[in-house]
Image (tube, rainbow, N blue to C red; front, side, top):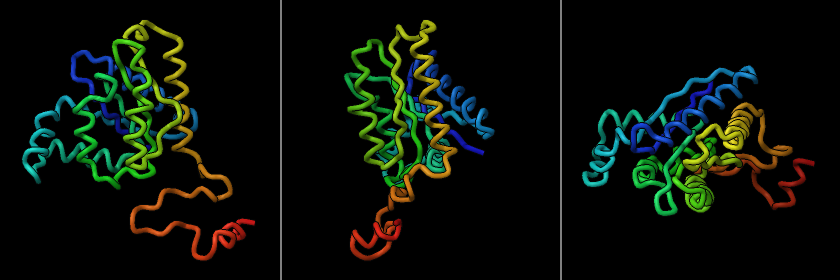
Length: 211
């Protein structure tokens, strides 16, 4: 069973970010189902945590049951689907606040499918210059295809639908692949203080073990 946690940073109701998040989640469960894999979905709407997040920054050590549950679900998820509105060329403040309180090592090597919404297509590059670097810093495994949706894309756009299906398929593949490395050479990220899996010796010695 794959546990998908969907983090939506949209603040309005209805929310285009929530709509995109639901579409990405539905496409991912479909992609997993076609591979014979079961999954469940849990949504975290950050608009419900705004006051708790603010308190956590102004009161060191503060955490409400609701905020603690959201953090625990995020850290224990099989994969994350994250969607944020874009404001002034970057992710929203509440989106950044939430990931600021997540333990820096908690989502290492966790698959993350990224999405973003905005009123204009000119914000589309924010996924690559703002959102992806955040998860690269956290050493998560970001899915290659990120999905941006401008207001005009929500009119039954085939192009948006195709991007959603492609991204969801990549996330499903990431979750179901036996190995995402070639010949065992890639490995996974070593956490701070842990050795990698290549063992000791010179670089040449390490390579020879795979010949």
